[in-house]
Amino acid sequence: MIANCTALILAGGESRRMGQDKANLMLGEQTLLQRVSAIVQPLFSETLVSVRAPRADCDLIQVCDNPAHAGPLAGLAAGLEGAKTAWIFAVACDMPFITSQLIEYISEFRKDYDAVVPVVESFPQPMAAFYATRCLGVLHEILSGNGKKSPRTLLDKLNVRYVNEAELQAADLRSFFDLDTPEDMSIAVNIADTNTKW
Image (tube, rainbow, N blue to C red; front, top):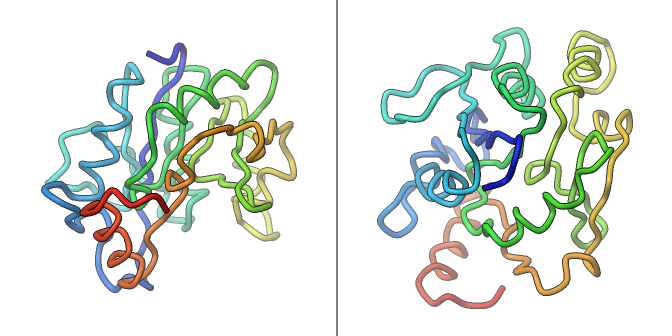
């Protein structure tokens, strides 16, 4: 169990490129949302799901995005507002290969930072990262401002501990494979069926 931290599964995206609700897509015998929740629930005292509107098919605690905002920052804000702990671990519902080993490993870097974010192939992975709930003020400033409302904008304003690939050691980098298109879904099915190293 990771101390003083709540899991937040982001499931409020519009799934435009996929063409249908990603959270309900089946991978094996589970939906993507069920698969990710099964991975994170044993690690945290509470698991929240960020949604645009309540989901009848989800029995976890749901937090609704502010309708005035859109995108992953809206979901992150809803999760930070709903968490009763000092930290959250945010993960997108379309990352079905995230591993408990990776989550536990990067949790050790939290210390005095505002966020802990893995970096893979030089790209930060803000949708598989830890955020201190004290980040909420900065996040509200971004959402209410006129600038770009992206995860990168948020990270630029925080004291972030980036965890690079060398530090990730033998972590399975499939953890960071996210499903945006039907083609990605086909790759995921192949990985799940064959347990192929990706």
